[in-house]
Image 1 (cartoon, rainbow, N blue to C red):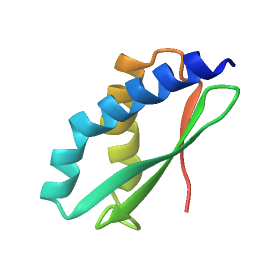
Image 2 (cartoon, one colour):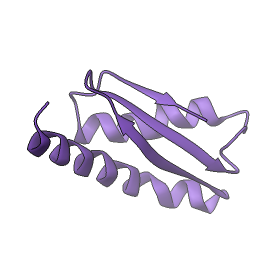
Image 3 (cartoon, one colour):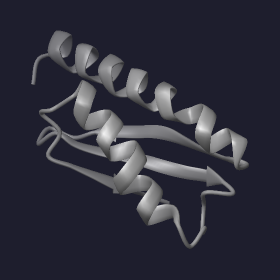
Image 4 (cartoon, rainbow, N blue to C red):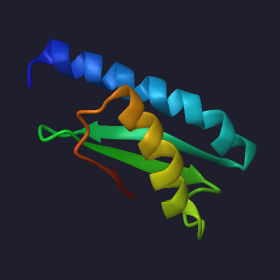
Length: 82
């Protein structure tokens, strides 16, 4: 993965995260991009109220993953890390 492509991919991912962030913040949570691996796995960290919330996996899949996939369809998978 060349640096230019990676930088563009990270910008697309962060743009998607910024689109869903207001909804998470409204509920006392947040999300941050941790890493984009060479195989296009996106790693994020759920924070605040989202960390440990029983609905966090639904939020991850329904909200965050869909937003990222819309902006970065090359994503292999989305993984929440500690």
